[in-house]
Length: 440
Image (cartoon, rainbow, N blue to C red; front, side):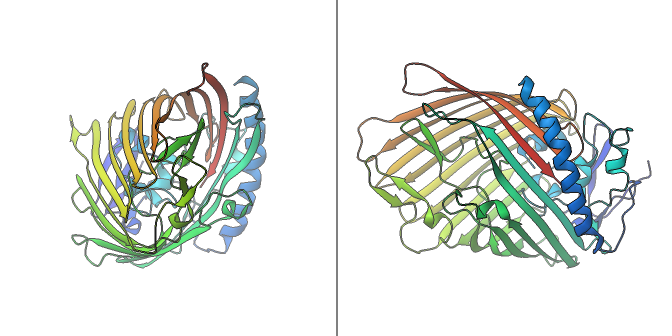
């Protein structure tokens, strides 16, 4: 394996695969050690993506059926690899388009190697996600879920959760433009306030200065979880969990990010209300009110420290965030610790309130064990307790989830789960769930 040419970055070694920790400007991190061809003509990419989506979909359906008969950029990987969110994603807070580092880190992760005779026809000419001399990045995320509601008499349904394509262009080191489109938001059963994508410009003239991001994008609040079913930032009523933040949520605004030291991230932003302004909550009766009142600006702030120990084999983070708009506030505290390539433990506490309607507190903890880089079982415990202004009794749901992240072939993740809910009903409710994620 040839050494990589890294400018302004450091390396951590995870499963003997170098992972470049650069200064978030992905063109400064050239992964010369890859033997995969990297063709320059960007016009090849649409055909490649179309072919890859068809091939992955066919293969994934077969694998999903097999798993079902017996049965995606996440904070856990930060604890397992030591990489901050912004090292593997173009967005400083994680999620969405992957950098060259993020693509490489997961490109060969699978139970069945890409070089095996069964898969060589599918992955024999993988061009990577970088084009035009590293100035253009392209990617995608496709998600679907098979589940059954905890409501009495509900039937199992399978539905798309996300169908997004991503792109970014970095003409100079100081400037990055990014764009994504989520076709999943166009379906009729979309979440209130869900966006069809995002677009923003990021400017950082000098590495030692903060980066400013302007456009239409998701504000940096708490930790970014790719699993939309996690209880964080949710409320419960009548035995059902509902989310304050829709998946693929974006707002018009501006945000400053300062993360020059490897151990610190500071962020502050000002945003509009075009997304969350559509979300409605209840005061405990049949009355529903907008979660955000008026059209005043939403103010956000986030701070995270990233301590490492024992020669960086133990990685941790501790942070807090706040989002405020009039009588609405969302306060979040989160922490995590991991033993490189073995275990990760994360905690999340959230308190969301609209003073004249609702207050909801959620707690989540998850322990993940990396048995193999492509097989990661986990157990998660979470609780949501909600109080209403016009109701004397609180509502609460406690959830225990036993699941696993399984990568049967490259760029395909299956997430089988067994969920146990303890509500106000006399008996526990149980369900099994399966998520499919195709990414690039």
